[in-house]
Length: 70
Image (cartoon, rainbow, N blue to C red; front, side, top):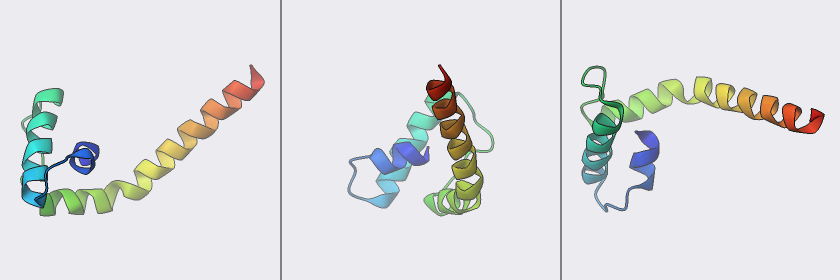
């Protein structure tokens, strides 16, 4: 949802949030555990940035090592 929010072309923050939320709900077919406001999304992004960055970094390193070995 954060990527959808960042990529949105809406000019207002609240509109960006609403559009990305609607798309995210349809895309992932979930109704619980979804942030109800952009303030909540900001808090979630703040909480999850470090763990996600670590996971992405590890995945990139593993991919690079696999590519170099092959």
